Image 1 (cartoon, rainbow, N blue to C red):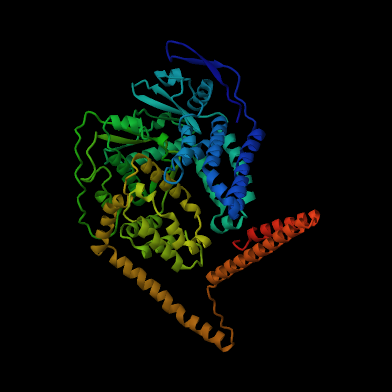
Image 2: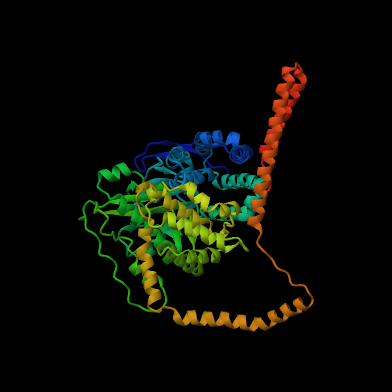
Length: 612
């Protein structure tokens, strides 16, 4: 990749500005690698020292908890400064974290929110060079007018407004200079840190960090292909063609290349500009519900979802010319048979607002930036639908089956404590609003699920990485828009449609065939298994296996308590002995006794490695 030519702008009558060459931007791969890797390594060391090591000591735990928020605000501020300076992958990571209003404290999230708007634009001359290379002509020939001033700068590209010769207003997205090399260096730095921490046992048991990073890198590199992004936008336009409350800008394929994307220009209000939306009369609950239902359709019907729903990619267009009326509720489908996308889509109320939602100013939800998308196979979608039924009907067994089928639970894990933990979580969270969920009795939940939390028999499947990312970001965004939204209530229309399909004897032939096939496989293998069982019994080789993990944990707790009691008694004796020695004038011996007492206290409180 040759070095880009950056330019300065001078006014002309045709395009408003014609760039001319200046100094090219600098790119130092080695310095960037050291800066990124040292930052993330420092965060890992900080977490280990403060939140893992010192938190094990009761004497330090109160201070660790007291300073936690301040420490993480400082880390977030340092990360934001580095991301704004370097750009690239750090911007995307910061945007993701800033959208997690459901789990990240507001003071920390506010430090990262600026990354949605603070990305510095590349020099205007770079835009000219890329357009010349990709479209074979300068902007003055391709467009009737072209604004050299950037209107939006993102992590991988920046947007300029233009007007085509036929009068259509468009947005031109151009990749940033050196972005291929920048992504390569950033991924190398993060890979280096991952290799250092991947063997930490709690991480190694639950996630293949290298595989997850490889999936992240694959999607990130895919984002650099603007032709693929235009195709994704076209698919979304087709999927939402029958929903006037959702709008996707039209891509202009004849002017789109790998590094230049031309799309229809849209105007709207940033979805998190709640003050402006309130002034215009937009119902927050209706907006949060539409966003949530829109993603239900993507996850459970289309199997093709927008995987980067941060506030910079979502806008609201207020339709002041329309009358504020509620769309009609969906008509229940009467078709028997398979649970098809068409049947479910007819019953899923994306644009419909329930009676309890106050009628506000009509609006349209607009999506932009389709570089990061996800695809779900039909099997995964069916499992997720069953999971929705489990959530909507408060069915822990169904949820547990879905988690197992999605490979979220570690192989060989005991189902009983997991089911008990799911029942506990549903008991505390079912049918509650997001604001109520933030006030849960966490200590009570921890007390009831302490055995499961101790083991954490869960893992992160590689193919669900971006699904989990999108789910968490949508939940956080809906929380920020309307903290009192009841996500269980929003799931019910979709769950009712699923239950109606099951009650109409849908799929009974297919289910019968599947059950008969599984039963036949069991019957065919049963004689061989019985023969092996009796042979082993005759040889005296039968073995039994019991789950003694809880007993072992209890014994280790007793051992730790005994050690601490012995250490405390020893320290007390040494301290009192030192006092007696000091009163008799034996100062050196008294100091030795006190140092020995301090060593006994440290030995008693020192954390054991039995958790590993």
